[in-house]
Amino acid sequence: MKLICYLSNGYPTIESSITMAKDYIDAGCDIIEVDFPSSDPYLEGEYIANRMKEALTACNDYEKYMDGIVEIKNSHPNTKFILLSYENTILEIGVDRFIKFCVDNNMMDLIYVGRDNQEVKSKLIANGIKISCYVQFHMDENEIKAAVESNGFVYMQAKPTTNNVNPKFPTLKDCIGHLKSLGIKREIYCGVGIYAPEDIKMAKEAGADGVFVGSTVLKLHTDIPKMKETIALFKKTCNE
Image 1 (cartoon, rainbow, N blue to C red):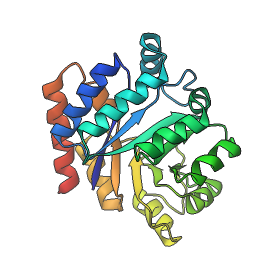
Image 2: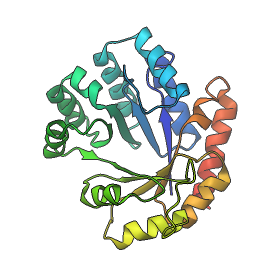
Image 3: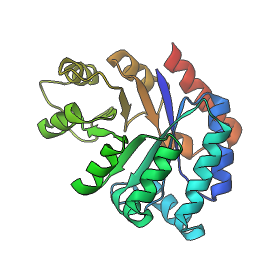
């Protein structure tokens, strides 16, 4: 099972993010989720939203963020990357410019956060960019339908954040099993609620192809040895 670590791009600087990516990979991270910080990160919690805000305060030139991502990718050609971008950020960059960046650098997996601008999404998909689909733990029928029709991986909520449990699918294993029964053969990665080895073990036993780890790793950026130790433990659990 793949370990996916979130890289808060540009915080505190783009240069430090380049170094941090190497630390992630050296410690055992398989896939890096790297963001373009958004000026309106309305779905993020306070912690990540503040990091995006501070990153943009330090540098609001998206061309430099692109250059940093390219440097990371070229330095680690065997590592897979998933881009995260808000719709408003793609529009700020320019849809054609964003597509060219993705295609030229073979970074075709995208977590797209937006207000469903179908024109933008259709253009991205037409150019081969694979847009992930988020499915909440309560297994909303519209989200399931979108996941079946999507061309990208499924981002499955690992744990309910409230009491949003569908009695038909009370466990993560039930949720993933149902998605696969509908013919989804693309990767199903689990996130939101992955904080410890037991969470990773649960996701693996449920049939996930990978897990997203975010704040647990981000909060250790000031203690690199501890961060690497944590990533190594998480990866070990993925392999068990």
